[in-house]
Amino acid sequence: MRVLLYGSELSAATAAAALAWVGHQVQWLPHADAPWSALSRVDWLRSEPQLMAHLEQGLADGTLEVIEQLKEARTPEVIWLALSPAQRSSASALVEDPLLVDQQGIVLINNSTFPVGETERLHALMGMQHTSVALPDTLEEGRAWESFTRPTRRLLGCDDATGEQVTRELLRAFNRRSEVFQCMPRRAAELTKLAINGMLATRISYMNEIAGLADTLGVDVEHVRQGMGADSRIGFEYLYPGCGFGGPNFSRDLMRLADVQLQSGRYSALLEQVMDINEQKKETLFRKLWAHFAGELAGKTVAIWGAAFKPGTARIDHAPVLTLLEALWAQGIKVQLHDPAAVPALHALVGERDDLRTYTHDPYQACEGADVLMLVTEWKTYWNPDWHRLGSLLNAKLVLDGRNIYDPEFVASCGLMYRGIGRRADPKTL
Image (tube, rainbow, N blue to C red; front, side, top):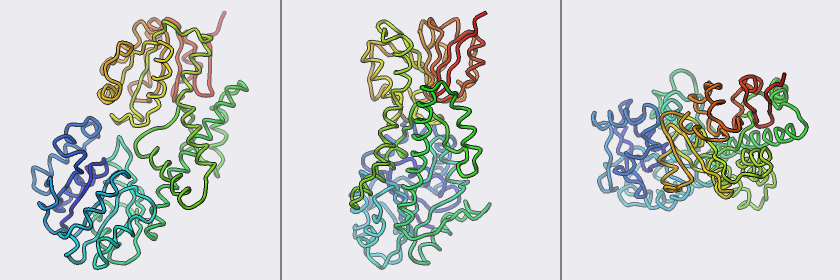
């Protein structure tokens, strides 16, 4: 099929590469805010496993073409929108262009997270001689290629048989293992995407509240988590306490759901609480540091492992580390930070600072001369450190685990103090 793909989101790049890979003729028009000349160099795109290799292969094979203006486009059979919420006006301008409006039978696939009802509005702007479907973005950063080409589910919002048929044919190569489409009306698909992320965020924030209570009561939250997860009505997914969630999509979708509630005249106290709890939890490690040193933080040096909002990505959008850094710097604390991918994004945001040193290769470099280690992002390289080496490097021999990935008793047996989210252990004295 001839596909015109518009946008510069990760979902746009992934769809461009994957659709070209299976033989569709894809013309990709990146948004003017991030043209290909700039987009091709950004770390978050280049660090996505397999993605750049497939983009380059598509360009070399001729199944993928990057264009700079709409007038370069051939008449498409499918228009695929993958834009940020702030770029809604660009979507409107595209679908109203005479080059497209004067054609017949184009299928608009809206892969953007826009307000509920936006796919219908864009369809009306294009004209009823075309059709439209909502296909909400369900990619996972850090494994975007895998989640697009081997999906476990896809929400497909369509109100006519043509839109469903064309979408199924377009994505047929990725639907052979099992039936992954969940079909429903367009508005229902748009709302379902937001509702899913709202539910996941609620589970995370609720578990973080329980972890805070466990800290107060001297209970190991891991026992509570295991007991809750064993209940078949609850399960274990998204039941891990931590120092807050971030990311460009998860955080944005939660705020979008709150906006939908507000615009419909329904105020959501629950969603407000979920977002407030998450912002508070981003300061959890700082509060533990403050408590340990009784507020005497002047002259301290803190090592941080992880800046990206999740493992596998170079992005720091809404990442917990940003709130943590501001709190540390406000107390005059020096930070030595290691992250295998997100250091360039961090420097692009905060600049070069005398109170920030960064490392991308050896994580132990960040711990040299530091008083405390804070684990913020659970990259696999951090899961099994040399505890005795860390004990010799950290002046205060304190580990603050923001993701609860370590065994408290084992860390304590190596002579370090461990403080997690609802978990703690101290070295045993003889």
